[in-house]
Amino acid sequence: MATVPDVFSPGRLGPVTLRNRTIKAATYEGLSHRGRVTQDLIDFHVAYARGGVGMTTVAYLAVDKDGRTDRHQVLWTDEAMPGLRALTDAVHAEGAAVSAQIGHGGPVAEARGNRSPALAPSARVNVIAMNRAQEATVADLERIVAAHARAAARAV
Image 1 (cartoon, helix red, strand yellow):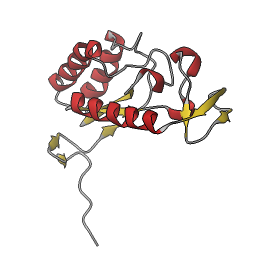
Image 2 (image 1 turned 90 degrees about the vertical axis):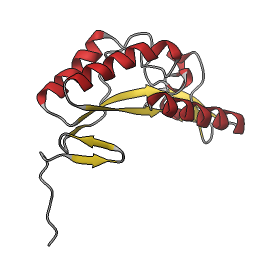
Image 3 (image 1 turned 90 degrees about the horizontal axis):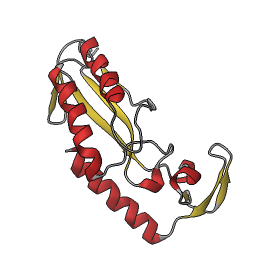
Image 4 (image 1 turned 60 degrees about the vertical axis):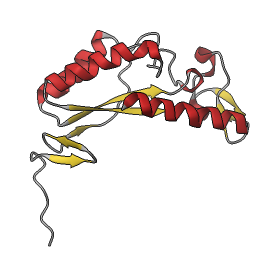
């Protein structure tokens, strides 16, 4: 029988060493405003770091304006970087790591708030998002893939 590591012992996640193996999962907090980090969002994640998690995950960071599922979600833009840096520094100061959930809402993106259609593999009505998604084109997919690459580079 394999030995299970102690959840409170340090662990490695790729190149990052965590003080323990406890990770706060991504949960959309609704604490950003106009696509930017707020002090409330920083305080939220710092509280988890002070509470002892090894890593906290900032959710949902949209790679493109049309991929937001809420019009206030943080966007991976140059303008958002100072706030994301402040959040990261504050979490690190408490001894925890921070990760980012990057994504694009696709068919559940908030079309009205984004002022752009939601995108899906095919045109369809989405009862969860209460919208009609349009079929994504090859150009849409290439743009979204490139936006994910830019967001990942900014996260690093």
